[in-house]
Length: 76
Image 1: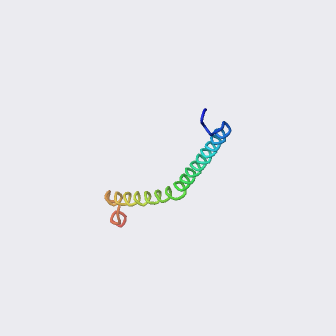
Image 2: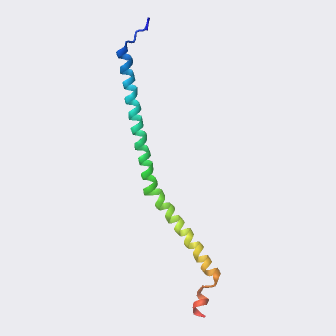
Image 3: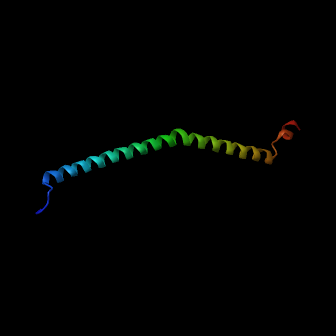
């Protein structure tokens, strides 16, 4: 390129730096996704399961009483 100060070696070395930066950014992104997946599976799923179990047991107990299987049913 006439009038350009950059040589072909400079352009190629800049391209390799950009490739390295993209590779590092991709690795960091994948690591972040892995950490998010661990957060969900270790913290959020057990908390959600505990909450759902408690809600289900309250619903089941209320239905149990509504059907008529309370204390009066067993004691006569």
